Length: 479
Image 1: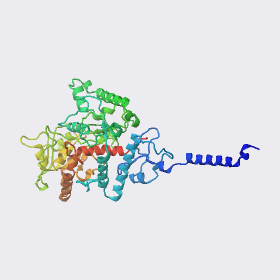
Image 2: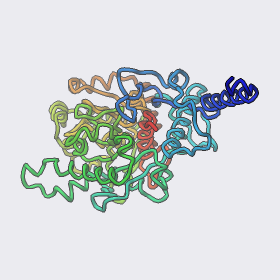
Image 3: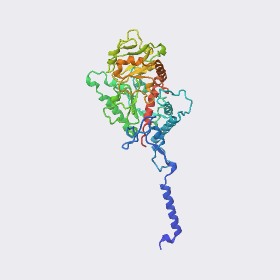
C-alpha cells in the first residue's frame, strides 16, 4: 500500500492546499484590472485604432468612429488581467491616465451641454462662431488644468530659445518666449511630467544668422536648415527617451517663416509623426491638418503687441471692400489687374496714396480683401479681424487657424480666384442684415487672435496651444 493511502488525511490536506494556491495565482484580481483607451478624437474628428507596427497611435482614414463611441463602446478594452496593486505607475502611464480623464470630461460636456469647473469662469464660449462650444470650453478648461510641456534646454541663442519679436515673423518669437518663460502654467518642472515636448529652434533666426546674406542661387538651398533640425533631434533623442518612445509624435516646433514647412523634407521618415505649428499652412505643400497646426500670421509692430483699434461702427463704414499691398504670388496680380485704382467702392491699391492710413482705411471698410501672396497665409486676415472688418479670403489650399474650433463661414467669406472679377457683385448681393450679423461675429472672435504678454486664456497663444493639446488628445502612446 502506498503512502498516500496510508495517510488519507494528509493527502487530502495537500490536495486542498494545491487547489487553493492555483486559484490565488491564476484568478484575475478585479481590484487590479484597469482599462485603456486605444485612441480618441477631439470632438467630431475621426480617428482610428492604433497601428500594430508601432508603439504609438496616429489618425487614419480607414477605421473611424466618433468620440462618443470611443468613450462608451468596446474600444474600452482590458489590457491586463493581473497586476500587482502595490506597483507604482510609470510617468507615461500617469500621463495617459490624465489624458483619458480629460477626454471623459469633454465627452460629458458634449452630452450634458454644460461645463465642469472648479472655479467661476469669467468667459464662457457660446454662439455660432464655434463648431461645438461645449466641447471647446471643457477642453480649454482641461488644458488649463492638466497640460504640461517640456522645452528642451539644449542649444544656444540665437538659433535656439530665441526668435523675432516684431514684424511679420514676430509671432514666432513670442510663442517661443511664452513656452519657455518661468511663470508659464504649461511649463513642466520635469520632462517626465510633460504631455508634449517643444523643439525651441527658430527658423527665422536660422535663416538670418546662417543664410544671410544670400549672394547666389545655391544659398537658397534648404539643406543647412534641415541639417540643423536633424542634428538637434539627434541630440535630444540620444540624451532622453522621449523622442524614441513615440517616434516624435508628442514633439512639436513653431515657426512663421516661409521656409519652415521644408524643415521636414530632408528626411521625411524622421518627421512622419512630428507636429509642425506653421503660418504657411499650405495643404498642397505637405501641411497635414489632422497632425500639423496652423499658426496665425500677425504683424507685430516694434514696441507694441498689435495695431491701434481704429474700427468704425457698421453704419460709418463707407468703403465696400479694401486692399493695399505688394504684388507677388499668383493671386494678387489677378486682383490688381481687375480692380487696382478702378472703383471707389472696391478700393484696391498697390501703394496707398500719400496721406492715407492703412489701418484707418480697414476700419472704414465693410469687407477686407485677403489674397494670398507667395505663401497662403497673410497678416491681413488678423488685421481685418482687429479692425472689425469681415475678411474676404482669396486663397487656395489654406488651412485656416483654429478650424477645429472656429466656424470661419460665420465671420468671413471665401471667394474663389476665378470669381475675382465678380467680387463687387458678390459683396453687394449680401443683405445688410446678414452683413451686420457677420460683423458682430468678427468682434466676438477678436479675442482669440489678440496677442498678450504674458498670454491669457482664450487669446491667440492659448488658442495655438489648445490646437496642440487637441493633437495630443488624438493619440495614445503605448505604455
